[in-house]
Image 1 (cartoon, one colour):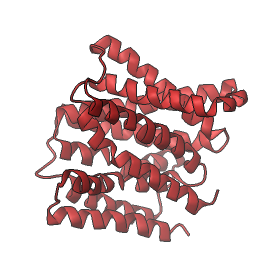
Image 2 (image 1 turned 60 degrees about the horizontal axis):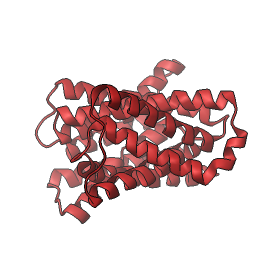
Image 3 (image 1 turned 45 degrees about the vertical axis):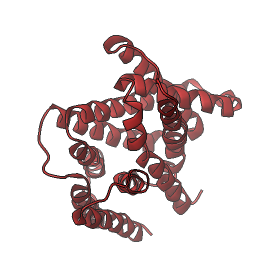
Length: 282
């Protein structure tokens, strides 16, 4: 797969994740956060196993261990995001979660002991300013919810970097499927310990959970390992920053939510940052 095709594939996954905000709003009306994580990743895992069960003939202990590792990190990412949204404003949560885009080059700098390229940092700066204008309505209050969101962002940055190491030398489809099962299993454990297990009540809530499982989880998080095999962590982080832009577009189409002028300026800056980063990687 070419670099361009891989990144277009990642853009499609990010678009699917952009819809997750709408679907989670509906799903969380009847079930608790860990319950939601367990259900969405459980549905995704069962679906992918049914579709690709023959692929498990290639399963090795090494792939299983790496799948468990990235599955646990994926669960930590969503735990931070969900708990953050429940303890701070949605706008602040959206911005703080998106700090993944700047955490990736920082972590890469520490690991490689080498400063990132100036072009990368310029693009990241464009994106961060754009994300702030797009997502933050008043201000970012620093509270326990903010800490949860930053934890989720850091976990996802670690996830992307770890996935970069394991995806290039393993069966990415198997890794993607295993991580879904692990994330669901971790959700079941936390749900049993901290929440009262329940199921969606209305057909609309069931539809939201199923869509979260099939499109946002099964498609998005199986596609990411495949795409990341052919690009860099920095590029994945920048493409991920398009998620709130897609979320805003979908909110406008389905919920008729209109952005302020600063929101549109922010969206343009995010697109510019991602576009210019592509020009500098050719």
